[in-house]
Amino acid sequence: MASDSTSDTPHNAPYAGPPAPYAGPPAEHAGPHAEHTEAAPHAEALTQPGATVRSGTALPAAPPDPAPKRRSRFATWRGTRPFLGGLLLTLAGVEIMLTMKVLESSLQVILKAGALGIAGYLLPAVMTLCGLLILFNPAQRIFYSIIGLLATLGSWVTSNLGGFVVGLILGLLGSTLAFGWLPDQEPRRKLLRRRRREAASAG
Image (cartoon, rainbow, N blue to C red; front, side):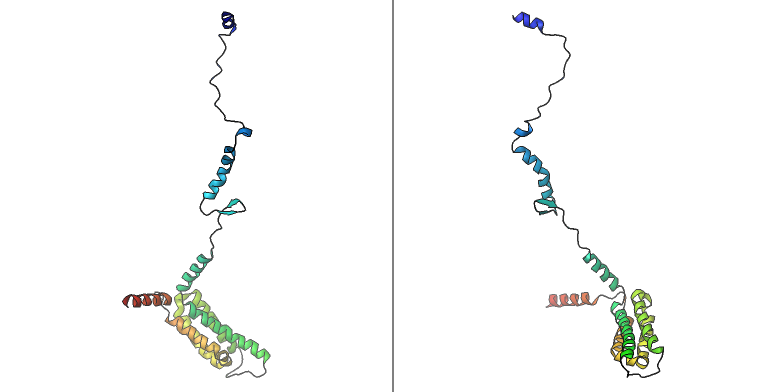
């Protein structure tokens, strides 16, 4: 019988290649290992820096707030020009023009110490223009501050006593601050902090 079975086996059959690799158990019999493999990407997302978890999902962190950069840019821009002097001179011109316009239209009796006409509006407009030029063209700050100072003094005669003295005081302060500003001077806050540190270390 053995000789008959061996004689019936085809000896010249083609080679079918190596057996296929083991593919593991079927999906329904995979057990708890399939759940771990599916949850692996989620675990990797949780381990990423800056990720926040909300309602069971990994979300990227919020972008950084651009407000500090804007403040630093504004501080840098402000430190390269006489910012306070130009701002005060601009506000002085605006205040004087407002008193000329609003009070003249609302009150019948207005304090006047000089001629009526265009000079009452021209001088505060010159003050406002000089203040803006000090802010945006600080290289010529000395010239603009002198013109602003002369216009401020002239507003005492032409523009309701310099906007009832308020605009006059603001214009004088702004002009003098812009005239005395130096581009290479140390900021006042840093200077005060350095002096406090030196006093604390010496004491």
